[in-house]
Amino acid sequence: MKWYGIALAAISLYTVAARAQVTDQQGIDQLKNHQPQQALATFQQLLQANPNDVAINLYAADAALQLYQGQAAVQYAEKARQLDPNNWKVHTTLVVAYAIAGRTADRDAEREVLHKLHADPKAPDAMQSNGFLVDMFPVKQYRIEAIEFFQPLGKFHIYYRFIIRNQQGKRVWTISVESNDFDEKSWEQAHAQQAADGERQFQMVGESGNKHVDHRMYSGKPSYDSAKAQLLQIINAQTAPFPGETP
Image 1 (tube, rainbow, N blue to C red):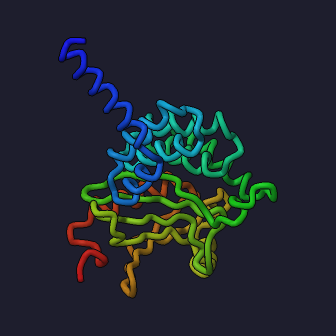
Image 2 (image 1 turned 30 degrees about the horizontal axis):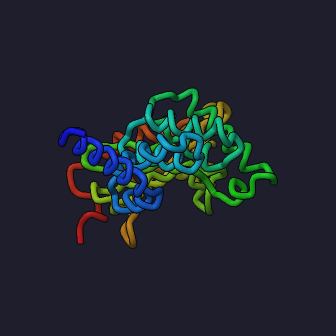
């Protein structure tokens, strides 16, 4: 064998050995360390050897979501659904993947699936959850995570909660979409027709630690897209740092 043939063989053996050393724990650690690009590459390599691994497909989808690569996340999450259609984690991943990919109808279909699972005694993980991550998106220098609750949460009836993080992943502010009974009753008296049409009055309330800000009030139906539109207006109008960004 010529010397370059030996070299190529050595390189080939080294590549195979390197691939064999890649583990799912490496990818998980990369996700924990905010290295989604490296994590995605790790999980993609693992899937080449075992494309029907549900967990690895979900991890790959998670890494793609962290990069806002909606189509890639959909690809991996749909593969996981094909392999394990009743898996709660598959559906919680799919709903975000569809949201990031801009596939609103598919997103809403998955939201319905999650609500049905929440009421299903055969799905204990879903029944024990208060809500689920419905969307992730960047705005200005922030990374936003949107949570939808199955039922309005707590005494203030929180429908949605938006967690605002900086680029390092630190939570700097939270904005909740509330519709408490006290304000709602007085609003219904003044807006009888809107109330009859299924609309409510909502408050967008921001907080971090002991800091509290009433951002705005608006009327409408309790839809996620309306809440997101209001949130985008708040963040885009924000010129000073959020209270949670300052010491």
